[in-house]
Image 1 (cartoon, rainbow, N blue to C red):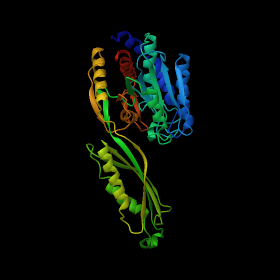
Image 2: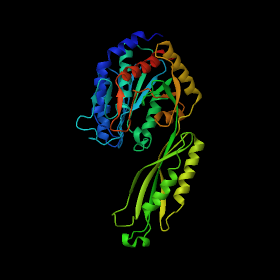
Image 3: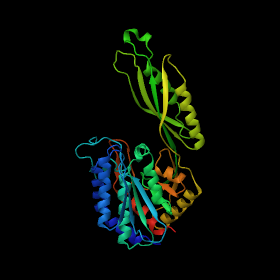
Image 4: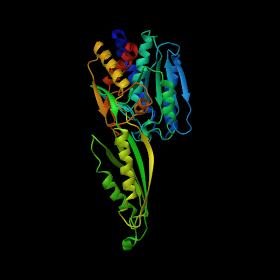
Length: 383
């Protein structure tokens, strides 16, 4: 199928959807701020209602509510699903009074690339498909609410809802940040551990009578931080808290360790490493409790994902979008879980940019049209 007319419509919508992206990124929505995440969801729900699309909501008591927006809900073909998350990482106010701004090349702000850019492109693609008269299949946009903390707040019920809405789809296209040269076919899994250490308090002048929980934590962190092989297991200890005063031996210290792995075999090795380091005492008089705070499976190269990649690749080449490569990623996303649940998934359909999880996060303005063209062409052409 030829996408020339579809692409012309997408290009004509560019200015409207730059404004759309600015609006949703101006609504700050860190994962733990349910009011903000829900406000983003209501923005999408209102826009979808104006078009007469079906809007379904899974209410959540702690996380933001999850939405499924469906265009052509009565169509008989197998659905194509677009998906992305509304939540971001930085506390409200981190980006200043005006959190979003543009220059000639880029848009800057919370979530412009991770991952509200992909959500805006998804809605743009659906809008263009409708304007093009496309009626062949349902197109679903699933708006996830707590991806950034691995859906810990919802106890993975948000991910379960995504699966229920997408389980019969012919393609699940996740709109995490994109790449110009291809799409992601594999991602590492994640295990996040909390190490809680107790020691014995003492005055600094008699520090030899104490047992420092901070010193014990430091010894453990040094050993955990040795795992830095991108082809194997990596570990980052990114958060630590402990002590009560600078002239007191610390009685308590807690830190987190973020492990990344490629497979279930590597995950078993991660569990062993964490348990052994937690059980080893370096400072006499200290003790450690280990808790698995959250986990996410790896996205592996399943047969159906590889078949979907080849279909997408042909659609792009046939419609002038260029050839693409298979990309292996060190990150993680909801498509990992949904791949394991048996859905045909590809990752990285969002806008293209950089500095995600930083105050300098940006997306290239021209990538919004590219992302929408990619999404729309797959929905329009896939068999």
